[in-house]
Length: 124
Image (cartoon, rainbow, N blue to C red; front, side, top):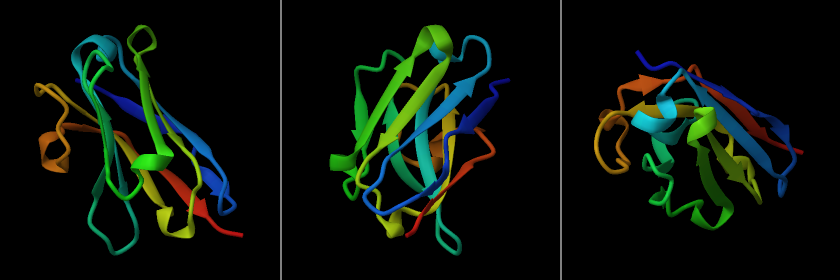
């Protein structure tokens, strides 16, 4: 069973940055594809970023691509999401997700494991 726990969310002013972290249970770093999704109130959960097991393949949502960086450290079972130039419409709960599937899926349905989420609010 893979367990994921996010941290790093909070309140940030427009134009600011946040670095979200997701720590997985033992052996997550070597076996699990890790991604980030977000969900705003009343909205569907949507893809934000993902990286394959090695960290060499990365995909980003087009709406935020220029403002995102996803990185992982398999020795620490950790994936990070750096978000810059945040805007009020980026406000949502951000979820770390994991899958044993191949590649780096971008659909929420392809992920078996989910963290509890960390809220991000962009407001002045």
